Image 1: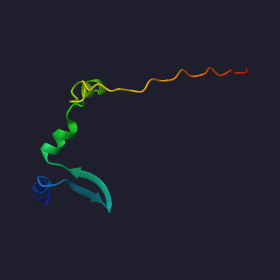
Image 2 (image 1 turned 135 degrees about the vertical axis):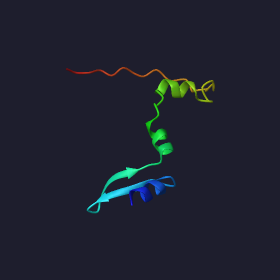
Image 3 (image 1 turned 45 degrees about the horizontal axis):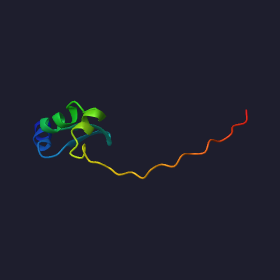
Length: 71
C-alpha cells in the first residue's frame, strides 16, 4: 500500500488522511527539491529581472502643503 502511494506520488502529490482529516502529503523528490530550494532575496530577484534596466518616465510630483498639527 505504501509503495503504491510512493509510485503514484511520482505523477502527482498524494494526500494522506487520518480519520478523514488531511494529515500529510507524499511528494516526488523533484517536487520536494523545488519547494526546499533556497529562495532568492528581494534584491536578488530584482537584480535578475529582465526589466531591471527599464527606464520609467514618471510624472513630476507636486510639492505637498504642510499641515498644521495642534498638540
